[in-house]
Structure formats: structure tokens, C-alpha cells
Length: 243
Figure (cartoon, rainbow, N blue to C red):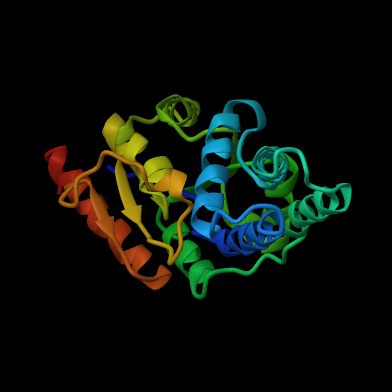
């Protein structure tokens, strides 16, 4: 039987990616003063730098800001001014200071799921920033446990499930990222509720799931999450020969 439901944080419970997009657009404008590459090439170079630095800096606004500085120096052949480096640092700070705005209806959705299942929050990124967002969200009281992790992969989900003494088939993850929230859980034998967000970081678009994955349900709004979880509960029971 399905017992534990995990929720992602960024762009599942609260808005996040839009603030990063705004910072990246402002970054492209700064770099554009030094080199005429076009926004697309600047964004592609920035993405490649971020991906290369993930093992060093992890996810979040601090790593983004450092990667922006590195990218700006490289693209400008070290001509970028100290004043513009400072502007880039301020862009990172602006993302760290953005308000926490919940997706419409998400609190009610989590409450409805929590009425019948244990729920946990599993979110990745910078520890200080994620702790701040969780506190400001007003949702912390709904979760049995809050996990802030550096990466969401099979090992992370195995550890969480092990601490709850559960098998993957007893767990479903709700999130906007197929790569981080859904695919690792499904590969382990669990279930997923995919809530697409209107913008997604390119790094998170890479995944190996097919459109017809039977262990994943896609919903178009938070209000549909509780019904999707109940549908997965029925599917999990049927898979185990239950009722």
C-alpha cells in the first residue's frame, strides 16, 4: 500500500525558476556590453558553466552567481569591469532574497494528501536558502519530515525510504522535475505525480522517462494532486494484489 508521499519544493510548492530567469536575462544584458553573442549563446554558455560547476557549488543562487562571474570573465576576455562584476553578485543576492509565493491551491492539496498519508518535503539546493523558503512558506507544519539535500538521485530516495522502513512501491513523489523528482523514484519501483511548471531549468529537462510511463500521473494544477495520489494508491494496491 502507498504510505509515504514526498513533495518537491521549488516550482512545486512555491515559485522559483522565474526569479532565476529574470537574473539570467539581466546577466545577458550585462555581458552584452562587452561582446555581441546574442542572448541565446550567452545563456547556453552560462548553462554549460553551471553544469560543469555543479559538483563544486551545488544547486542554487550562490552557485549560479559564481558561474555567472566565471562566464562573464571568459566571454569578455577578462575585460568586464569590477562594477559589472558587482552587479552580477547583486543578481545572485536578489534571487536569494525573493519572496516566497505559493502556487495557488498547493496548501490545500498538501493538507488533503496529509489527511490520508504521511507527507515529507524533499527539496534540493543551498541549505540556508531552502531553510529560509521553507520557513517563509508557512507549510512546514504539514510535513512529517523535511529533507534538504544536495542532489535528488536513487541513493537519496533509498536513504529516506530506509529511514521510514518502507519499500519504494510504498512511496510516491510529487514534483515538477521529471529528472529529479520522478525518474529516480520510478526507477527504484516507486510512483510519481508530475506537476509541470510553465518554465523549467534546461538542466532539469533531461530525463529518460517515456510519455506513457505507467507509474506516473501528470496533473495540470495543485488541486488535482490529491485525486492523482488516490489513483496511484489504487494502482499500487492492485500491483500488490490488494483491494
